[in-house]
Length: 145
Length: 146
Image (tube, rainbow over all chains, first blue to last red; front, side, top):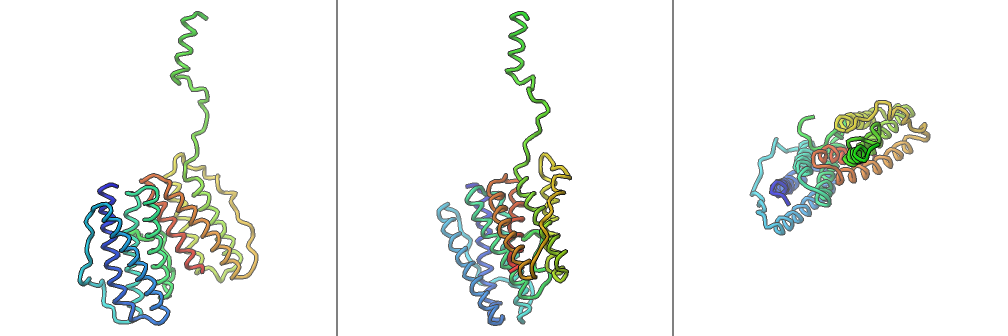
């Protein structure tokens, strides 16, 4: 596995750490449907984090640790803020996984694509819950579009 | 023909200096199937939009995404597909109510997303991001059509 791919996986782990932190912050502001979705999302990010920890350990690569706290990109005080942050977080996670696609091959690329797609779909689901139209983007995770 | 001349002909042919089929077209690009599937999706959305105008807000952005993907694929393929290659790709007229139309599109997107996943895994590093983006976008379409 290339050094570049290891760096991409380390970046993905950092993104998963921050997503887990954010879910804990915004989840409590959501309604019942949103909270259920948030629990599922947080669980998925924990699963991805754990898989990355194992993968990086197998590669004898350093695994970034979670920070005690992360600065939120905007104030989050209402359910609408929470939905906006949820989509923002998933878009960020999607971007990180997307960036790893070109550095992987075969089944590793498939695993990265799965994580990327999962975040893209969840970001779309959050925009749908927030009644954002359209809820989709042409190129998920791409910064300029 | 002298023995020397015969030997020369054999040597030239053996070195592929004389191409036996100079007009043979190059093989189609490996992403041709993905591009054809993208055009088929555009046609399916065209038919759905013609059948039910109340779906315009929901379906138009999805169709435009597929159009953008077709243009992006077209731009990187070698040889470039003929502009007329997909003009005949018209979907059958859509029948049924709104629910049936959305279900049909959803089924098409699920299948198309799987096709894009396999294309992403098989393609080159240079193309992996674009094809991966297409796979992820199709999966997000399934989400909004649910």
